[in-house]
Length: 374
Image (cartoon, rainbow, N blue to C red; front, top):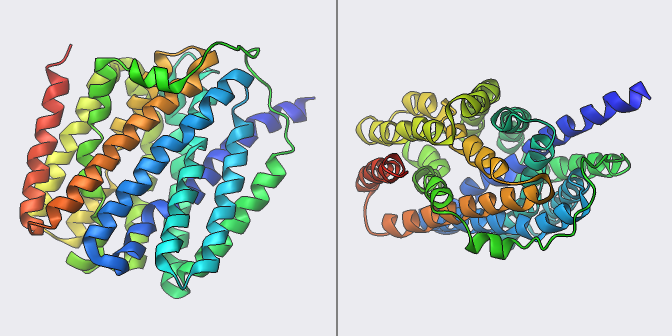
C-alpha cells in the first residue's frame, strides 16, 4: 500500500519532465527549421500558427476532464498522440512544409497536458502559485534536458534522428503510464461546463493580464533566427543558450510561485514586465552573443506564465478548473499568435533595428495598462 502511494506521487513528476522534454523540440527548434523555407517572415508566421494551435487545442479536452474528474489520464494520452505525430514527421522529411505542419500539430496536442497538469497540482494545494511553480520546475527540467540533447543531436546528426529518438521515448513512457490508476480528488460533476461561454464571459482584468504575453511573443517569434543569422550563433549554441535559460527557470520556478502567493498576481506580472524593455533595448544598442545569452537566460517569462495560470486556478473551482486554466492557455495562445503575426508583417517593411525599437516601445506601453487598471 505504501509503495503504491509513493508511486502515485512520483508519476506526475515524471510526466511533467517528459512533457517539457517533448515540447522543447517543436517549440525551440522549429523556428530555425522554418527559416530555410521563406526567411524570417515564414519563421514569425509559423511561430504564430504554432502558438494559436497550442492555445486552442486544450479547450476541446478540458471540459471532458472536468466532467469526468480525470487529469493525468488525458494528459498521458496527449503525450502519446503528440509523440506519435513527432515520429510521423520523419516520413515527410523531403517536404519541409508538411513536416512543419505536422510538428505544429504535434506541439498543439502535447500542449493539452500543461493545463491538465496545472489543474491536477492546484487541486491538491491551497497555495496556487506554489503549485504552479512546482509544475514549471519539472517542466523546465525537461526543457533543460531537451535543449542540450536536441542541440547536440541536430548539430552532429540531423533533425530526423532527433524526431525519431524523442518520439519513441515519448511513446514508450506514455504507454507504460497509461496503466497507472489515477485517483480523482472530487466526484464527477456534470455541470454545464462550456469553454466557449467561459471565454465570452472572461473578465476585463483577466484579459488585461493575458495581454502581457504580446510583448515577449513579439520578439521571441523571431529570436531563433535572430540568434543564428544576425548574431551568427550555431544551432548547437542555440540549444546551450536555451539550456542555461531553462536551468535558471528550473531553479527559480518555486520561488516565483511563492511570490505569487505572497504578493498577488498583478505585482508579480509587473515585475516580469520590467524585463522586456531592458532586454529589447539592449539587443538594439549592443547586439552581442554573450549579452544576448545572459539576458535570454533570465527566467522572467515565468514571472508572466506562472501568475497567469495561478490566477486562472484561483478564480475556479475543482470541478471546472481545467476549463478555466485552458481558457487562460487560449488567451495566452491568442496574444502569442498576434505577436508573431505583427512581428512577421513588420519585419517585411523595416529592418531589425526599427523592429527592436518598436518592440521596446510596445513592451513599455502594454504594462502601463495593467499598472493603472483596478
